[in-house]
Length: 330
Image 1 (cartoon, rainbow, N blue to C red):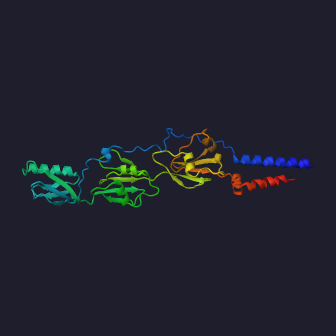
Image 2 (tube, helix red, strand yellow; image 1 turned 90 degrees about the horizontal axis):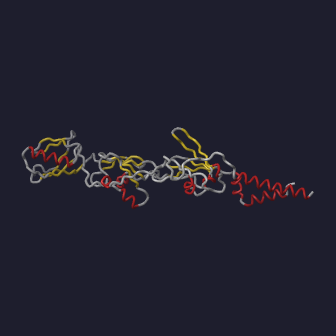
Image 3 (cartoon, helix red, strand yellow; image 1 turned 30 degrees about the vertical axis):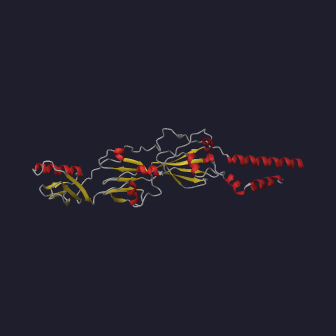
């Protein structure tokens, strides 16, 4: 009789331990077959930054005149012309010895050339020395839009840099990308800069800003963690380097004991469609499957294994209680 009870207790213990092992590692059939690190995947490709010094810091940037500007004209040895003038709403200005000329839309260099030619054509001077400078300009502003505290127009008359323009709008938001795009009149392509988190890199990207510039601060792409992660939050993506699933797990504090690794899946939105991509984390960790590259707005979900969660909640006492109950089972 005692022998039969001992056999039953031993068999019950074995079945309980076997069930625990099975529940801790349930097999999953579907596996992610996405890109590995360094592949030619289209997502999170490195941003091409502008590096041409002549574009970033031009030796000379001519100011474009417009209606309402107050200019100072100086003509060597001609005191009648050396005064300040306000450009009228129609873009013209009346100058002594010259008459009415249209300056709106001209750069300061072009305005100087026009005035020189007028003086020569009118027989006033053979080789006039002319300079035009801007004293006031209500129209010389840069537009800052996107993920800043107060988007709007920033005056840029005189010397103003990118960081100063951003500071005038209250600075970047927590969701701001550090890769800034600037569209500038006269340039065939936008200027792309990375402020980064390195002060040296930020200083390199702190370029002069001119009137007519449009500074665009995009929203940084984020991925979300949900489920058994130690940290359930949104993690920003870096525009210049990809973020993989294992890197995200590390940022989120690692994968806890109660996580169902093989039940991991990524919720991805493509257009108006949402799909789930199942990932076998054990195979990814062991290098048997590629480490998926995440896309903006991905939601990474690691379900909780209820049995493992119960064990963790109860600790070793839970296991001892189960084995103790099995020992006295009839």
